[in-house]
Image (cartoon, rainbow, N blue to C red; front, side):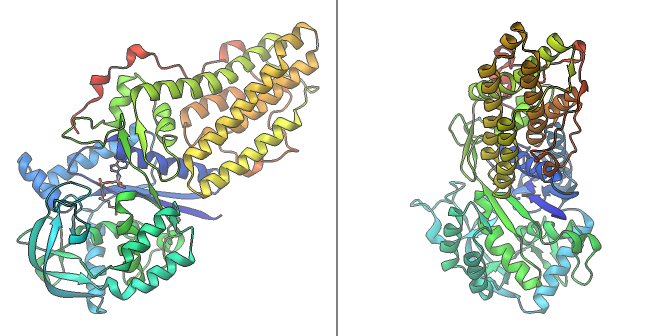
Length: 525
Ligand code: MSP
């Protein structure tokens, strides 16, 4: 594997980041960090989507210009990702000059080659979706099914993209590439949507939407948000219609677009049609994650249950985002909806990160100090059965990531931790020490510590701070490639002094309920 290029959806800046946005960025960061343990060159793109009627209206309501609103909220997204240790390579804003210029050229090229044409149109526009809706997709009351709002009747002269021309090729691609859309059950939904797909509007009249990228040579029209937004995936890495940068040549096609299920149609139909028209290779995977609910209800401003990710960290007095990252990433199986609840959060991270994983390391190191003055002696061996399980777990975790089964990868890691805990209980090193069976006692401890080195690598993408604290205490280099440690014949830990008593620290402190002030978390989003 030479490079791995992955992207998130770019978030609308008409509001502040909430934990739904955070879920996606955390998942993507975890995938990026996992592949950084498998290849040298990972490029992780995220950013903000800053044009369109929603942003124009929100800015007007706040009495500021759209650009001012974009600047404030785009920064709020960056700040949130920093707090969550979302370590992107590049952050693109669709108001960036280079992006706007290339979007205009892409549009012009598609007009010139006949893929975009001008047409008088009347349709039902949902500003929540920023798209025209098909009347047959509305609810019985004529509302947008996602936003439960009545779409506006809009009559305009618009530019249209000849999507129908690419329909058969898109269907063929989806059918011939079963791993293209993840999870696979979503591919059937997309194929159904493709059955009656029509050409799509790709511009709006300036009289209705002024906040957008101008169509070159037609000042009455602005480029409609989706063609502008989707192009970010190629403009960010230096695509231009007449010249492709070395970076673009290196990273495109993208390995995975990570997006929410609500925008799968735009990515697996519209974007694919645009790429086909531009003659560019197609993404390898589109991973549509599910949605996060709060206490089993849909997050919404009207219910007042919109939670900002940083307020979770603050209200639980968390030093870093590891626990929240772990909880979010393991909240739902691949592509399914997940849920956030304060109690569940507390219980899960206390059980998994503090009790199972943290305590195991802490008490094993403490026994090594107590019985052997912190030294691994050369006569201590490593239990082959447990080592084999750990080596196999690395293989399972890699496969899970290749299938974008992030929560399932977390379960594999915890299953290894549980097996190591059981090994300690079954072999009771404290009894072995009492009985004077010191070599056997040392073998149990060395085995567990060897496994904990592997666990620190595996858990690193989810919990980078905890992993660092674990690996520091183990004297283990966290940048070691997964393939190098997935080796039965190779012992990571060498004989010699490992740790002194005062260097042993808990890697994760249990969340204390007194810190949890539920109300404090309901922030204005
Ligand atoms: N701007 C478009 C995406 C353009 S991508 C070229 C957009 N923005 S958004 O701000 O509405 O959503 C950004 C991402 O957050 C989407 O992938 C969306 O699915 C995701 N989520 C928004 N709310 C969510 C939850 N409640 N739960 C999980 N993800 C959610 O769509």
